[in-house]
Amino acid sequence: MSRIRPLEAADIPAVAGLFQRVFRDRDTLPSPSLTAYLREHYLEAPGYDPQISPLVHIGADGAISGFIGISVLPMSHEGRKLRAAVGSALMVERRASDPMAGARLLKAFLAGPQDLSFTETASEVSAQMWTRLRGVELPQYSLDWLRVIRPAAFTLAQASRRIAAARLLAPVASRIDRHLRGRMQGNDLRWSAVPENWKVKGGLEVAQTDQAGFAAMLDPLTKQFAVRPDWGDERFAHILAEAAGAPDRGEPVFASVSTPGGALIGAFLYYLRPRGIARVLQLLALPGQAGPVLDCLIGHAAQNGAAALRGRTQPALLEAMLGRRIAFFPLAATIVHSREERLVEAYRGSQGFFNGLAGENWSRLVDGRFE
Image 1 (spheres, rainbow, N blue to C red):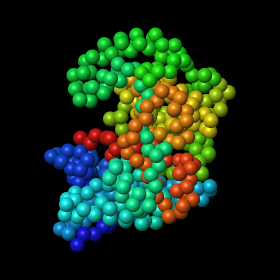
Image 2: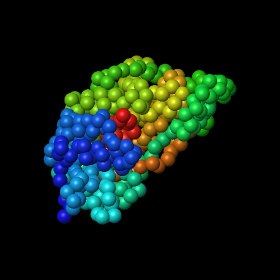
Image 3: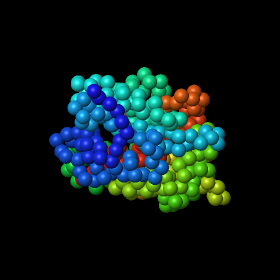
Image 4: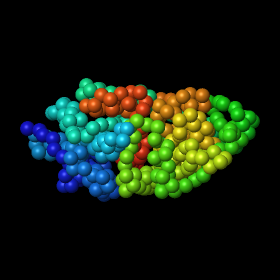
């Protein structure tokens, strides 16, 4: 008889093996670093709540055959404290012998004591399971976006993912990009590239900062949301440190955007890869300032040699993005679930903050290497 129970420390090696086989290379054993990370991420991180714990599925043979990762996300709604949880890494092995194992894991997660449940990496199959259990898919939170800056370098970065030797063409790509971008005017808007002298109107100032400086900007830049994160200093410091300590993604860049008079209007965090695709983890802006902050992000990445920018949408950014030659594509769905309809409605109405640091994509489990 199969059953579901909370994750225990003794389960971690088996879960690491399951993760390796399902999401990575099934012919390779999990590395010690993956095993250690799973333990730290799910059982030892600040804010761990044993009442909202990851779950394992135990098959009839007594072995672990399924898992759903669960991370606590403290939030607030109009001053009221909420317990939210982010579901991730839903995985099941030997589906033929127990085809409902994944659905039972998800159902057990959604039946937990949290006020809100989320995912931002739902595949088509898992999204169907969520919606059958009264989860609500949020299209305006579910798009990835891409802004090309250097077309030749971008094409080369894509090609080198399949053919490593393509990197040898980097000097040629640089010359092509200098020629193409140099012929563009500072205010040109093209899908293919960003001008060499990309201009940001209004004399806005971009200043790089550190993790602590970025953390201090979160509260003033998210006050407009009815539902928003309420991590606390220790938990948020842990998330920022983990996000910054992901060498596979590139160099983390924390920056603020201010008016000439020094008033804060936005901030961003992205991973810089010179001549590569820079991944944007978080973009924050006061109401009405998304466009200028986005321009500052594009200009900063361009000045530092990025081939392109890629990130995840939030509703507050969409309108500004539509006028800036940004391409959108769906890869995974963001879904919310709650027994309180007003909390779901806040997200349907784009009044809830989620994705990026308030989600899953800061974790190394999404795209990190464990060797």
